[in-house]
Length: 509
Ligand code: NAD
Image (cartoon, rainbow, N blue to C red; front, top):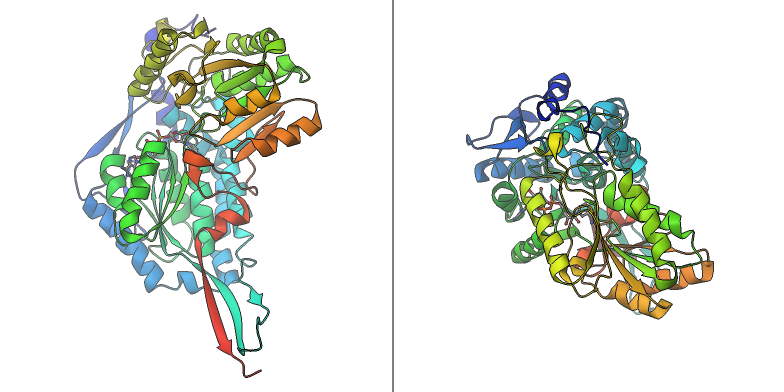
């Protein structure tokens, strides 16, 4: 299961790749300039593959955050940015698309260094650094098309003509997680800048290096100072200072449900606008008329390959019809057996470690609780040894006969753990699928198109994949229930960075 045969513990190191990438010391980007933090506090970035120290980044203080928000505020309130003509704003941002495309191979390697995503996996469209260029390309295309409306005069009792405008919402705090940092940055910064907002970006402390590299590209544009700012640091300190800052008009957040709740609470004081992309416990519904073995493989790929289940939309609850249960498990086991852990820069490595030791401990605790709650541990649940023992690895894990009310089925685990739950008919499958506080995504595996449509409408989740699932920059994605608020992608995302203003004019006619 692991490609460690020729490795001794000391041979698995990411430091040579780090050195080749020539990572600059992590500073802050404030008001158009690279600056040192006001404090000496540094965050030690450890490789999830080896727990070696990769580098340190600035842990921005409340004063740093205040500087960043102040720069963004001035650029919005006094600068030309929100009032630029569409053609001018587009021309200033457009060179970034080519810069991102050119830098994509390096950005992919930085992403691999920081979060352990296997380099082989970054060739997949949605996790390639090139996708960030497409996200910018898509959103910049809206700059000269996003407008308001005029309304027919409603009654002869008024001569007022009504029309509405779309105006940028103001200063945006963009806060992103570590699991797909390049895509997540683009999903927020592109629509915010396109709409005419100014931005303070705070990446995850576990993956700030790619954001720092993209900030270097943004620095090469001719943007007015303060339009884009970057603070790095720990969530509880720099993140908290950002979400509670009165100068921020909108918080756009992707991350866990708990922090999302905290952001809603903190935003209540100033009635800040919020977009929240949160966690999930997404189901896959597998019917006997599907290519069941392929369905088992497709589901297990999301759990065991690539980010090893550390994806918000991973289908971590497999609801499988009793008539095709064993065939599904055969497919899932085939993928589990293909997992190759090892140096994330090795093209043969196809799965990642967990992001940090705390996450490993948390996932091991779920494994224990799964067994204690009566589920059957079919595969995994243990850690690979030898060369991999220094990293945060867990073998791909499958639990069968899982009770949907158990922790294993109700809580987001964020690791390579699949909970398989049997069902007997369509209604039961829908009931189990919707019996969760989350509603981010779902998969339906069937060749019956009528069933696919019927179920896609009945499942309460923001994105439903029928016999497949991926990301496209031009389609809205987001959560029902506790999985989020608002959508990213497409025109809907851009509108969320605007206010709609209605103007009425006495026409005398
Ligand atoms: P997290 O919530 O711990 O952290 C996300 C970001 O919030 C980080 O930048 C962190 O520093 C910051 N943060 C933490 N506490 C904060 C606070 N009090 N105030 C302000 N900022 C704070 O999440 P994570 O571990 O980085 O990411 C994993 C989570 O993200 C999972 O729950 C996953 O499902 C979710 N996620 C959702 C989507 C989606 O599109 N819905 C995509 C990817 C990941």
